[in-house]
Amino acid sequence: MKRQYDMLVVGGGPGGAFAAKTAAEKGLSVCLVEKRPAIGTPVRCAEGIGKELLTDFLPPDPKWISTDIERAELVAPDGFSMLLEPSKAGNEVGYILDRKVFDRELVWKAAEAGTETYVKARATAPIMRNGAVAGAVIEQHGKKYEINADIVIAADGIESKFARWAGIDTTVPYKEIETCAQYLMTGLPIDSKRTTFYLGNEIAPAGYLWVFPKGDGTANVGIGIGGDKSGDGHRAKDYLDRFIAQKFPNGKTIELIIGGVSVCKPLASTVADNMMIVGDAARISDPITGGGIYNAMYTGRLAGQTAIAAIEAGDTSREALMPYDTTWRASKMGKAIERNYAIKEVFTRLNDEKLNSIVHSISKINLEHFSTLTLLKELMKANPSLLLELRHLR
Ligand code: FAD
Image (cartoon, rainbow, N blue to C red):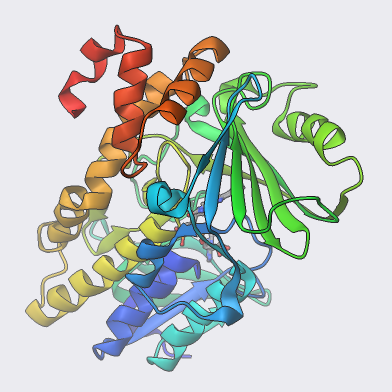
């Protein structure tokens, strides 16, 4: 194993994989370390992604697509359900991936492009020189060694310890972590082409419950609730178990995952001298849905591109890496995060009566295309006092 690279990537999720692939393709020497023994497992995701978002990165491949979704359903707290057909549902429909295969494929592509990849290799501390990151201490098979790099990409997901160790404040307020529980279930009487989202404070306080089909009566059935809503007897898994006992009493559980999703604002800065922070580690996930696969790929690719330019210019200082930060913030994704954060702040305070009224009113209008902007308009109609709070977003 070499001990010096142009770029070291910590974490082999979609963010790290895209950063590594992008930089290695252009000839940078890249090393990727992943703490788990196998890329992609265990899956901590409901695996949904909008079609257009995915194809921005790679052509869809049946080997990592579980289901091609055609419609989305939104169920109000009072049980009223509205169906969004494909032409209207936008990114609420898409693919349900098989992330065990998908994540592996992304790292595979990075390796094919020339990235040296090490699994069961955990970054345990940054190497700091003159106050700047210069690599990482790696622990693998009971041994410790150092890997030096001109640029380090912190792509270590929601746990995001690397950037914190390097001095960046990555704290997420407790109430802005959605605590999640999800079963992979089979034997379910569901429409295999439809994702369903259940809303309501009795069902999923400050969050939502989802059923994402994976084919053959199988689905990811999961829930995210506001961190401050969780407690003894009313944790995410308790809500989910109650729902399943009622809705899918004969379903069989194959897997359980517990995880967290940040629904806070992204980090104030996602660059430092010799370091860029991507994906969940930078809190760049959608504050309404918690979705972050696309965001991780987008920021990973951008970080890879920025690294190429910085290495070519021989300057990896914070200033030289700043285009990464400013570009993703100014992108469509960055703007959507900003807007959706403001909507989320309002949405999580709504009582069931208001939620009912919103779903009912959305179902009545002839939507050209469902989007968060449409949701915003309906939110305002249902609660005119929001006009004041959200007027800057229109
Ligand atoms: P990750 O995919 O988390 O990858 C980080 C990697 O870094 C991991 O493999 C980890 O093992 C590794 N790592 C961590 N620390 C170290 C270390 N010290 N050394 C080496 N390696 C390390 N998003 C969607 O778009 N759609 C969904 O339907 C969806 N559903 C979700 C459901 C749940 C229950 C949860 C928890 C999340 C969901 N998400 C969803 C979010 C999505 O999973 C993440 O946004 C996405 O995986 C972020 O990619 P990433 O590369 O930033 O991080």
